[in-house]
Length: 467
Image (cartoon, rainbow, N blue to C red; front, side):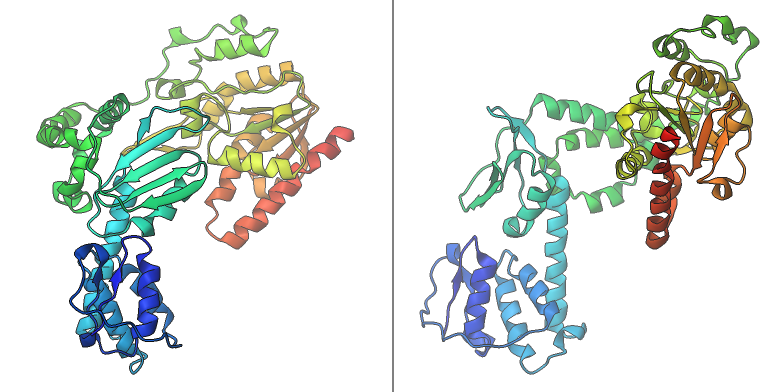
């Protein structure tokens, strides 16, 4: 009778080494167990290892099974390994009781891994040095600390941290991962950051979308003590009905029309001498109804003597919150492609033809809406001021709305892209698509081809500057 005992850390490697020696041994003659469970009454030396091969799916399945807390996973993995020598297609037979049990345990382990990914909450710890330090406590159902370590290294590689469980402490310091099998107890709760997070969570909690059973299925109660926001959940659930009633009583507020008396006196900024003066005036813009629901005016930015002006369509959700143009996904794509095209964004003036975010609210999301002709026309006041003060040699129109604002016609942009037209005051306008168009393309090959065309369009700017 053989009795391999596996360590708390290095479990997968230890099981694999023992399994190579015991694959030909009937499972009834092997007593698998954990080292910390105590010695076995059997102590026969393990046989010499033998060479053999297994189907690839078994390797992945075994890695999960050996994390099972009770040790049953060791025996089950060995049983399947022993049978695979005679039944190569065994794992494809989901009706087999042992295969079904292995899949059930593997599903439990995968779920435990997912819960640890989702429910670890770090607290910042005092310390010295350039890297910030954080610590977290978690209580997994199974012995998954080794399996989950790489996930946290990849996600939080720019800081030092420790994740403590009742049996293992995992640390990542100065780029080095280490694990120790030491017993630990839950630390004291609470810090100011957790209180701030709980307040934020309470404010974004949407009672109209509350489904208690679904929430408990995804976030079981046993994890609540590891989550600072969980303290607020009972009161949020209790008050959900009243909050929903209040939301229903409050009718949606449409964008208010601009009364005539709100009209901005044009002579306040028509002859402004600097972008800062125009930017300051634009903060109070009421020239169209979009100002009513947007967070703020998103004005252009860049050197006043920039030789190139990049004109987009309108701010998106990120830009509306930040108050800066082109900081969302489309802006990030533009920055990336511009570098490849030989453009330095820091030397360009970047703006939008419409300065307020137009959207419709759907749940928690704000969905972008295309500005209409009246809204584009109202914002032309600001765009013309920017053109006059920056006085660029080349203007790049990205998207139909920008093309409409600069030339008076935005139709047929895909046919006109790559060509050069003129603004109302005779400036050259290079026409191309908006980066958001590229992000919306579902076909990866088409997206790659259109992105290359976009780069080629932008690469014409240096040529136009030299002409």
